[in-house]
Length: 374
Image (cartoon, rainbow, N blue to C red; front, side, top):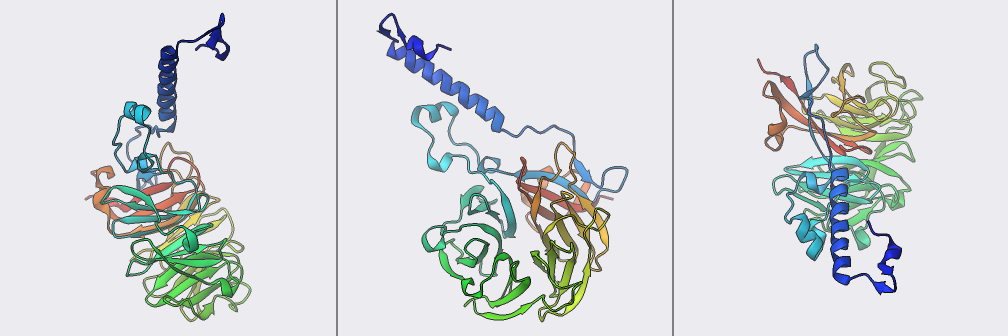
């Protein structure tokens, strides 16, 4: 490559056509190298199952989504990008540091806490966008978790705004509420006309009117020193009406009813089976199985409705399928048609599990829960 000082050699300026040619070649090299660096290279190790052989496989790692390029097909060649420039709509849209995740129909919604936005991933249309109403009064500052109601209204817990920010089905901003309650929301769930907001500052679940944001009641305090919520961080609704809350201080998952009565608990701080180092996101499936993210152990533990450990998956050390500071989790019965091509022919899928990782190449990791075919 010609040094910069050689552009002026013997008092003569380097020929402009030659300079233009060299500039294009340098740009081509940069794009080629950066493309190689940015592309996720995965070793073909065959299907990755948990637990590992010789145990009976129950969970298979399928794939991941980290940028829009994992979903969308490129529309222009590299040469056309060099010549005319890359349009905004064609630039890679990344997920930087995801936390909360929810699925509605064919769409995945992910809170990106560092980028201060919500990614909206439409699998049917193969589109990767960001929440349309995220500006002005609807501007997010640190979205951490979210929930959707039956009308596809989106409720986002923002820890810096200290509010629940509400968007309509089209993504337009509708309203924000909760600042008057002096809370720090870290998770949110919807059930009918009720909105459950997990308040880490006041160690409780606030129960609000979904439409007006009016405070109706609170739950989770006054359960005694062993069971009262203590730095609660994750919230999930069970199919039988219970609320499951993960707690950082105690390492417990506390189960309460809508009136705040204790139904049970499981787990504690530790590094043994069924114990947690740093519990975060939590989800409950239609069979009342409970999935708890552990950011310290870097895995997801699965329990039955009695709090008995069934299995765990995603542990570090694998070429693919390991978790890297996981945060959020959600479980869905549908959407298999979009991921069927990744399923091993010998495996029968029951439901899909989506886990967010705050570091690494698999920002949204997709797993399948099931059994070997008979």
